[in-house]
Length: 169
Image (tube, rainbow, N blue to C red; front, top):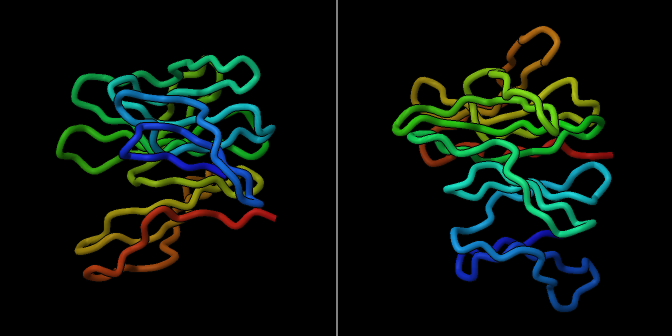
């Protein structure tokens, strides 16, 4: 189980049965939006001013896999379930976010669609994400093979989806 603390800038893991959390990584800037790799041996997270980073738990090294670019933020990484890939959102200052997929370790990020806060389907064939509608945020699904986007839920006013997650079985 993760814990990221905005007050201490620590990436921590805590036993689900209770007990003290173990500090895995300290960041002077904050380690945000953590996501486990399928094998549980790596954690992807966002860390400005660096970008999307990966902590390898086998040797505790941290690698920047999607660097920060001037005027662009990178966040909300989500690790694929069946492949070594990340989906994340990137947004230009003042602009709505776009979703990108990057094959690891050295692929080039590929634009998927406009949206934020992505999560993979259990078979990696689709993404669920938050998108911007005409007056509010909505929840969407995109089939990666076809690019077909389906609105799953519309939000209104203060009632809008945030951090959608696909249930895993």
